[in-house]
Image (cartoon, rainbow, N blue to C red; front, top):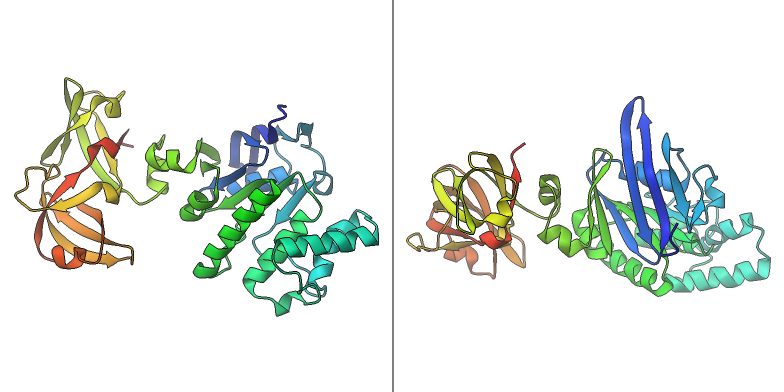
Amino acid sequence: MSETFSVSVEGLSKSFDGTPAVNDVSLEVRKGEFLTLLGPSGCGKTTLLNLIAGFLEPDRGEIFIDGDLVTRVPPYLRSIGMVFQSYALFPHMTVAQNVAFGLKMRKVPAAEIAKRVAEALDMVRMPQMGGRTPRQLSGGQQQRVALARALVINPKVVLLDEPFSAIDKNLRAEMQVELKQIQKRVGITTLFVTHDQSEALSLSDRIAVMSQGRIEQLSEPAHLYRSPATSFVASFIGDINRLTCRIGPASGADTLLEIGTVRVRLPSSRADGLGPGSAAVLFLRPEELALVPEADPAANLGTAVVETHVYQGTHVDIYVRCDDGRLMRARHAGFGAIEQFPAGGRTGVRANLEQAFLFPAT
């Protein structure tokens, strides 16, 4: 195994009662990287994490940590730190005792334990709370104790299984920032599991999007958002409009698309592999749609009626019903969008087709 990778899995598979949960997955996590396994419930991300941790044995495939084969090695010998969704703190122990637990199991001398526990609590900004019990802590503080306990043993890799799911939205945002800062400061390889796409986009160096036990795409957050490799990734990462269409003839560098009663031209590079007559789906982000005057010639997706608004603070999502029945969502910044495009009013719809994604219909 290359020295640049902290975790490598090769051809990993795991089934339960004959149903594949992880299906022939290969993955390499770089040293010091924050890599997220992202996907809906049941996609296999937690199973993959548990295989790497050693809590499950694979049916096939191999697992390497820092180049060492650990496929059949028990969890406590894999040099990993684990933060569970429930935090799994011992309620009868103090914060300091919880953090020290892994060191005691490794028979570290008492003086060194005290020093390392103090350093770990200081790292998560809880230096004065070592004497408290978990029930005296908030959810965010418990999460930090769990992280300190994982880091204090100086693991090669930290694994986190949806650690923010039980925390309210505002605190979750704060804890995401803290986790990222700690991870970069310590420089430890981190493998993170979540179903929350915004969490993955804000935290990760790279994201592995999973579906049905496989990795659909592995890439940097911005690349996933702007260049999804499959229709599943396009649908799962960020908000999206899905427009069924049919491929028309090519004309120079463009391909004609028939979207209901509307005809638009798309760069032919976006329609690669789709011949005339093929059924397809055009994906457009809400921010790539703009509402314009009804008679504006730039309204390349036709005209529509404004149905409703969803105010989001920093922007307004405006849902419009096109004349051929399509419902689309346009995203407008600013406070005046609701007044500018009132419900029941007519409008033109303009799309930035340079940022559209086209995939075969399934």
